[in-house]
Image 1 (cartoon, rainbow, N blue to C red):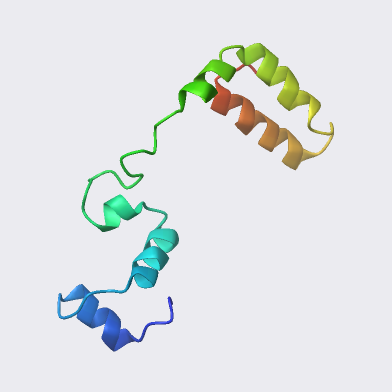
Image 2 (cartoon, rainbow, N blue to C red; image 1 turned 180 degrees about the vertical axis):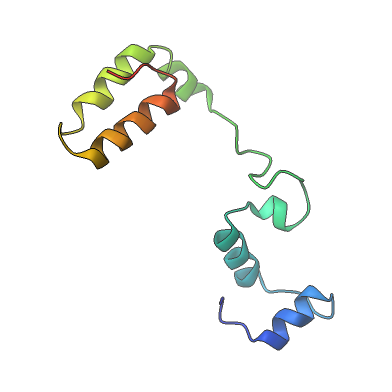
Length: 98
C-alpha cells in the first residue's frame, strides 16, 4: 500500500502529521476519487471538473450518427469483447447501436 507503514498511515488519519502528496495520490487512484475529494473541496467523488466537456468536443459530437458509424467501423465483428466495448463507446456519445 503506497509504500507507507501502518504507523505513518495512522498518524495521517489522526491528524498527527501531513500525508505526502504521493500518498494522497495513491489513495485517490486506489479509491478512484479526485484529489478535490481527497482535499475536501467537494462532496462529489468525481471532482469539480468531472462532467466538464470542452467546446471543441461538443462541436465534434453534434453528429452522433456519424460518430456511431465511425466507432462501428473500428471494431472487428464477432468478438464479444469488441461488441461490449463498441456498445459502451456508442452509449457514451449518446448514439444508437448499429
